[in-house]
Image (tube, rainbow, N blue to C red):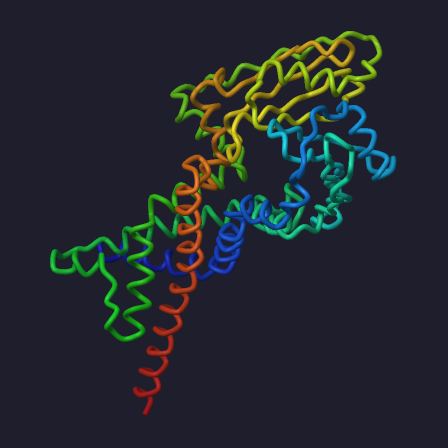
Length: 386
């Protein structure tokens, strides 16, 4: 009975691994490439992202918004601006639009532009077609195989789900059943034949990295499946009670302020004087409100607040901060930073990078094991025929 169960587990591990191996490799290697995106992007675009000589006074945000809009034209309305605390950074204005009826990323994303503007002079340092930017393409490939999110993300999610099953079946299959095999199961025999080295690479790297790979896999599945996100929320919060739904803000019916973006920015900055970045979203005319996303620290997204302001008065209507969330909400908010390793700083990113490399290597070494065994099997059968 035991041997029969092990045989089923072995076959499950082999065929699920072979069936999903290529997609697992592509997901993993794209994640590896994206790991140090911020560091590489900042280095590559340092001149566009920095102001050599910061001035004493900057231009009003509404004036900067108008400059950015004039550069792109009315057919590409500005959607967001990132205003930084650091005086030597340019401010980023973004215009994007998605068509939810299209299938591929290139038709789904109709346009995506980023303008880097000197906040003191209004000089446009660079206009970037972000739709075709290298790391944006890598991210969207990792996210949904360059397909519309509703189509591509479930494919990514189920691929990762199969990868998790392979990890679990691999542990069960590997588990040493005799003490004399225990030490060998944790070491790579570099002086052995190539077939043994490849097998040891597959087994040993997989076993040592199981906790890290499960963290990467589970945090990835949070985005792909609402049911899995709900499960994570319930486990973290130790309750099935859903998070409180904020009351929709009531704004005045008067016309928006002429300096609405500057007013909202000043009010938000007054509440968060040390915030690294305050992103303002374009005025929602039907609600007469402006949303602000306040990022307190560079490099992580979880330590943030989402605010809503009345466009007629500039008064803050709602404030949803990380500190006010319950345990389940906090874990979900930290999901991206856990997935990328950013929650642990540069060392966390290095861990995520190594984990991604191992995840990409497992289907390769696994396929080589299967292929070499098939060669040996075919060779044996030919000898038997002779």
